[in-house]
Length: 226
Ligand code: GRF
Image (cartoon, rainbow, N blue to C red; front, side, top):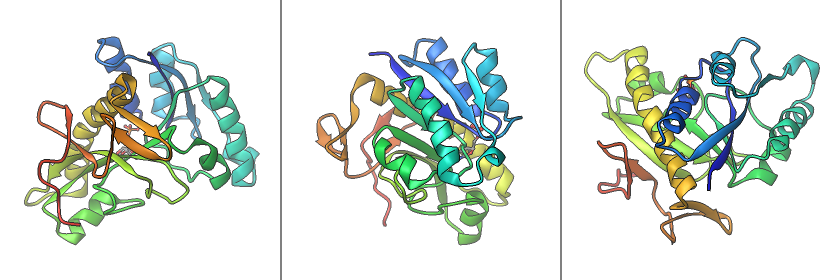
């Protein structure tokens, strides 16, 4: 089944570009049916338009309260009838009223190995914590910020002398294949949301899948201590 994707983005749109490229090259059986942003000049809107994908900006100032803004955004999202809604660098909190009816159909990519380093400035957080391994996660969006069940992760080493920028670039390079591989999993049916929980190959997914060196997702060969 060709997966219909709606993408929410606030920034440059490199994750969106990676998804579109994977679709173009036939790696991912999906179609981006709409891109939605809260920032008028988000690069993601240009990436979408260049690919012929309908792209819309919603002005947060037009809606003084978050639920009203979310209602406007998500009614447009619903109108394109997505199978999955992908938050790829969407930098706005989403109200519980918008999240709850969509739990299991909405994913977010977050630049840390959740549950570590939720929120903003994750690379600086990782450097000040002194961790040796950092990375990115794709998780199911729930009302708790960056707190939903994690589908898959990519681990990235922290190197001596890393700056937040250097580390961010190393993580971003793995975010792209991580997001594509996760969406492939949903498109092929190997990953699913069933009865309120994640399922992988018919079994409950108890630990995030890990992106391997060949950009494939595998059960975790080496779980990190909690
Ligand atoms: C990524 O690092 C993503 O994990 C974070 O915001 C960034 C978006 O980058 N949530 P891009 O707009 O996809 O280039």
